View 1 (cartoon, rainbow, N blue to C red):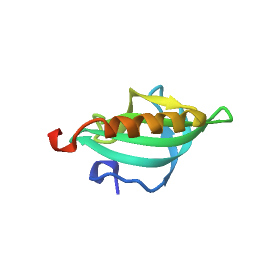
View 2 (cartoon, rainbow, N blue to C red; view 1 turned 45 degrees about the vertical axis):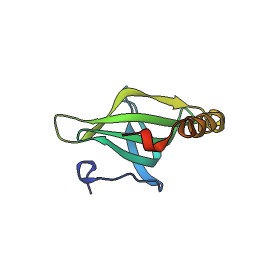
View 3 (cartoon, rainbow, N blue to C red; view 1 turned 180 degrees about the vertical axis):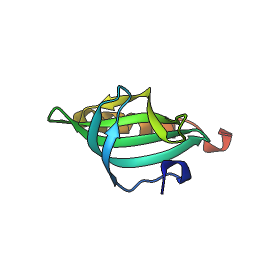
View 4 (cartoon, rainbow, N blue to C red; view 1 turned 135 degrees about the vertical axis):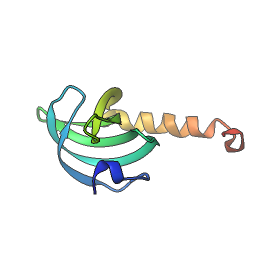
Length: 103
């Protein structure tokens, strides 16, 4: 299945043999999320290794001229030890509003 045909969010890990980041560097990694933001943009979470260190990459991907998804410069790369604090912050942010008020 190509990236273009994927519709919903995916939470299970998928091995992505080669991933090209926003600066064009290829790296091996595992995909943990593929969430559709719009018709032409997805939010993806990858765990990857770069120069012997592991990183978590949360990045917006866009549809290129060839119809394939490409990583954008919109995103953040985290060290694994930063994840628990960010996870807590996201949980608290999610709890801070009434879901009935979200449209």
